[in-house]
Length: 350
Ligand code: KG4
Ligand code: ZN
Image (tube, rainbow, N blue to C red; front, side, top):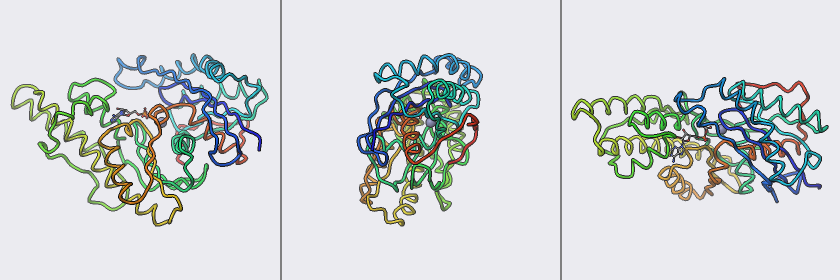
């Protein structure tokens, strides 16, 4: 069948992104190609506030989207006339940003006479391993970032089973808060990982929340509280944090997060493997999937179960529009179309 070329837009959090993806067939991931993937990060705009400010994010998306789309088309060497559809994140996310993206996509679709496809941001993350590695359904997915933490079994582009997830903070959020408590820089994940290298993960007794309960749900807010308590105890002893205190707290925190994620992944694998998939695979996405010790532990776990482990390149694990264009391509090929009444949804479970 004829190749499909899809323009994708993403603006649900603090990255304004546009991308063009092309695929030779109308099913599967054979011959998928990222023609361009442009990401304008907003981190600098939010840095002094210690978190993403929704109003600032929405305004920046509205200002940058048009230029971002132009850059993505330019870089791909295509025009709107070469595209088959416009895909856009319609949720979940910060409503102002999602609205800015949906409005922009509607304008492009109406102006260029292209079909419009609304994409679930989580489906974008979850379908990425098909774009990068051609994974066959069903596969198990661990989505683990600053905003998300859940296990999904992907059965089809529009069909996912959620096995469990965090009941409070996402691990990336906990890494960022821990970095702040230890006086390290942001983003916290890489800073804590670097600090942990010189640390003893066993010095502090830190909790492994919910490990005693069955199922795949997780909790990370108690861990953050435990770090705060141990930090204050250290400060009470020597009037501040020593280098070793910092390294040991970072190492202990990182080990606790990895232990929880690995044990819950083991349980998710049990459920997944009971489906007897022909080509079993475990994929990860999200910024926390960049964590070295976590990746190593998951690789070992998957290998021990005869399961292929797939971690897409980091730029496709974190927020981007290639994943939205790809998810749009897969659902468009399956017949999905949205009208000018496509709504922006702040909440949209898979
Ligand atoms: O996927 P992402 O870019 O954005 C969303 O949250 O959607 O993930 C960002 C998160 C941040 O919390 C960051 O601290 C964390 O991923 N992160 C890491 C590492 N690199 C980034 N966490 C642990 N270890 C890392 N190496
Ligand atoms: Zn995301």
